[in-house]
Image 1: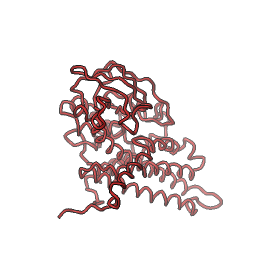
Image 2: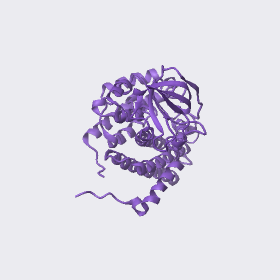
Image 3: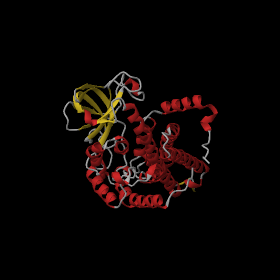
Image 4: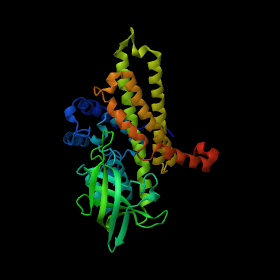
Length: 402
């Protein structure tokens, strides 16, 4: 692949970088700008979202005909990394999970009528959305074949019964994408549905308390007690639920990695700045070899992560599912983010452990990275399956045709 980017992508990156630096990052220092769950206040976020949209920095992940910027996955990798230099960044550009992944899959899978009803309001920033798949034991988690929530067809409707949990954004969402079981077929037993918050037959049982901080709408446990969904609100066709999840989760996992790289770089910035000004035993911290080695190691691992992410983004743009590439990026960058926050806190000492910087926020947030969208161990198992199947071709270079 070619590691150069277009002038258009660079221009968008530079505009996002300036907006983050000038308009978003200063907000992190005032406790009054946070909501009760340690994210940016929604009223403040909405003002910045309007400003970002008016400046053309909106929905980078979608095609222009859908209301987006049409940057493709490579362009997204460049820009998402830049926007998450701030802990508040992605939501301002309508590029935060779960709306990010939901919009991309709706653009790919929804009918024109479904796009008008379900996608357009998310694109316009009028509603937020949620992806409803994970279940408590013995239900489906990383293994969707274990799914217990059922969708029983009765005439022109499906009746949903079951329980889901750790559903990101559910408390603030209005539009929901739900995956439920419609048969016992191992490949075509799941179906994807769309439903609205105001429909009867379901409820939020609780907002699950987590280590935090939280996305807007938290992580909720949902109970379905007879929710009725019309046939026209099936995504793709009955039995295509597994296909739909594969279409959504690969790109969504990678966008997490894009954003986490931005947070990792922010950790290094904070550590560098403190090491340059802090004296101990007559010498700046930045002059000590131990500090230089810690920062140099992080710089190398961030660059490795960027290359893994860019290769996966390029493969997705070429039409590949990039399962192998996405899994490698997901494992590496999730662990990198945790290490970057940990090292930066260590260099900052007590200051890093306090709320005087965003490092402790990032540290708590980082621990979920090795769990969400597939735990490290699951992705390593996936990689081993590729290794067993491909043997030495696991590392084969793609040869250009002609």
